[in-house]
Image 1 (cartoon, rainbow, N blue to C red):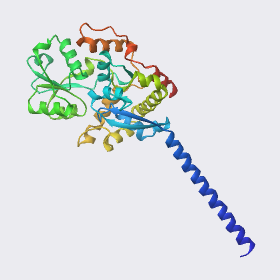
Image 2 (image 1 turned 90 degrees about the horizontal axis):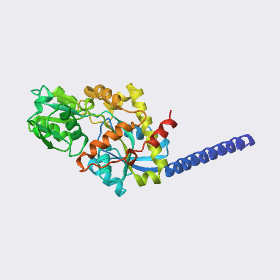
Image 3 (image 1 turned 45 degrees about the vertical axis):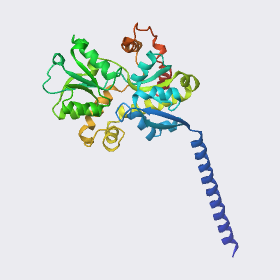
Image 4 (image 1 turned 60 degrees about the horizontal axis):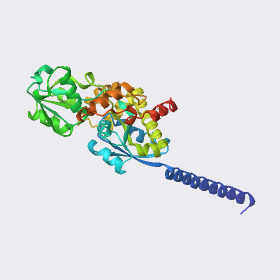
Length: 334
């Protein structure tokens, strides 16, 4: 073997060794980075547009960019506070449930708001042409103390209809409530997207839009006070990644519609394309780019949630709401 050939072979060997070392180092760095990701469990309550930003923040790598390994788990709203207190999950998205629990003494905080426009609408049979006609009717909702029940009571109060002039039926989830409306078991019910669209297309009437009668935080993030105090840096990172996803949805209509039609993050039934645009418009009208609501709304929500307690307790907003980290997250991502 002549000298030139030996030199070429030696050069090739050096290059191969360098490439192998670089790849091994890259793999090691990637493994080290993955190992350093902070595991976080987020309990979402539905595959709805309210929880869509969490799924997208994970898919787009926004959580990973913040050093977070986010696990998103579907959870019953009524169990999220108990799960957070027990340490089974770190965050919950059932802000209404957390508010009710906090008013009753649970040490939980609402740290981010997804929307201040309730996405529930009161749907009923076509024969009901006015809210006044709800007298003597049976009205369904998800559960006692939940946002749907609160909105129904606000609607009736605004039209001077005494509570004892209607019959309330707690039916559980939205699908069960919708089936009850279809079967004629109830006359009206609080429904969310996409059931509101399906109901209208089937001939049911929208009697009232919840957002016209009640302003409230719906969706967002809740944590225990202990977690907030011990891991504020994790909280701010999760909020920042989520708000980044919210802005993506609001600013990129084409991408959002593609997600709604091709992904299963939002339950739109078998005819996804039929409802995608309506779902997008409804969602983006409600999304809060800041994740923050004003103190006036905080006080109003506490007052409504505390009505069941006799005598109603005097609770300061800071006992339940803490948007300080959401404000920081917003400042750091503009």
